[in-house]
Image 1: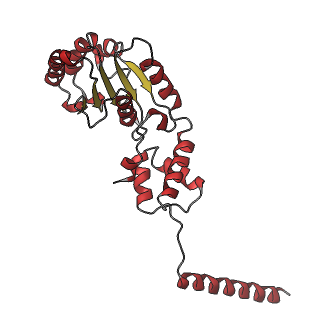
Image 2 (image 1 turned 90 degrees about the vertical axis):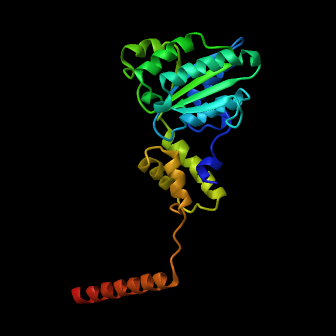
Image 3 (image 1 turned 120 degrees about the vertical axis):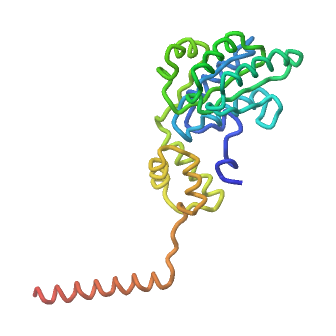
Length: 244
């Protein structure tokens, strides 16, 4: 199993660096009488959008392996797919005690017609249904004339970049130590996060390839360095004698 999947947070409490977003989600789903909703989670690649969506599903007793869980790519979320979900919602009313969670990844790729179909569905979202849209793009002008009415039907959660480098670096170093793949200082983990623009998936791949392990010098390298140091000291002594 890849480290990214092995250490993917399974609970909202395990999400790294997004305390404000997690607190907002908990306030919403913990409200008395709450039984349906739609979220729009916005953030850079690798910052945890789908992970947070999956954690919400688990909080509701609908983990990714359950029948009530579904993930859709934005480009495949056509008007026909939205209508299919709406029809499915009507048929599922006999099982109202079970949660249905739909996650639409890369939601910015949805067509205008699909967004228009969502307007009707989200307006009359059945009980125990939750839809989570995730995207890397800013939402203010994505869907033209449908943008404002669509955004009025979802709760927008914007993932922060503030403090992520430090939080991600500490998290990665702890995991690297647990996997015996560590050997470099925290500052280099911060650099790793910076180079990969906060993409945790890419950072984990670097760790798996041994990039954060301390480089052990071979005997030949040590002898060569020692010889170079002796040669430098000798030249330094000769230079001092010459100057005298």
